[in-house]
Image (cartoon, rainbow, N blue to C red):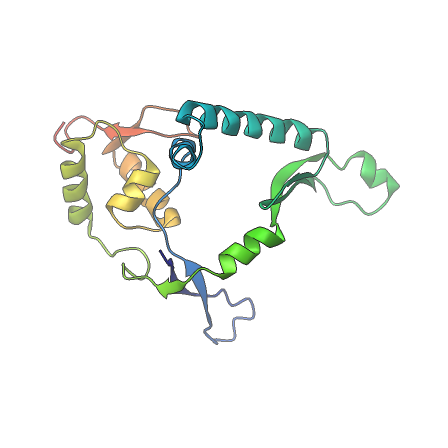
Length: 203
């Protein structure tokens, strides 16, 4: 399979009216640990449960070593390391005492072998909608009504695929549906899971 891409307008910090575009990967699929475990099982003597246990343990050990300030290298995959941030601007020794240093993110740098494999991949312009599919409120309601007829819950990822929206647009539309009282989050704010509110989408 080829890597699908589409062109998106680049930000213009100079505000000089000049338009430029950049290529960005287009994809609505997310590969889970279960899927990776299943695929790896098919290529080795380990069971899916064994593979998944190893992947879960790898994630735990990765977090442990990164939490100790170590850089972690996975052969043929790449390098992981922790990035930090300062809560306040630091200009002198006194500022260092009040910097409020904390975790920012984990950065990843691909290994040369992984880059080599990726360079061999073909790329093609996406055949699906250029950006988010322009749907009216009525069309979104129709798709959700049909979806909830056979599915009890909805996630942002499922909505993104269902309505062919990019991630940011999907999140914005879902927030609007929640504010309008059409959807209700039955999980946590960080990992929302939505169900129809009373009187909507066939409920």
